Image (cartoon, rainbow, N blue to C red):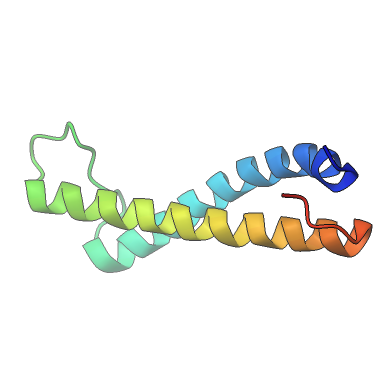
Length: 88
């Protein structure tokens, strides 16, 4: 296991937690615009339609994936700058 990979582990864990929080905030704001409501539907909310629940879930998944990829990539780039080696 190379040094960059070992050095990235704690950084990756912290960035993962931060990216989850950031993605949650981005999704909430996106849902306010798209859904015209403050709260996204919950799958168990019987007052919401299938369409609305599945749309919210798809948007949430896309936002989380994009934010996680951006944060992971930025973290790996930072480790390369510090160590000269890509952490993967």
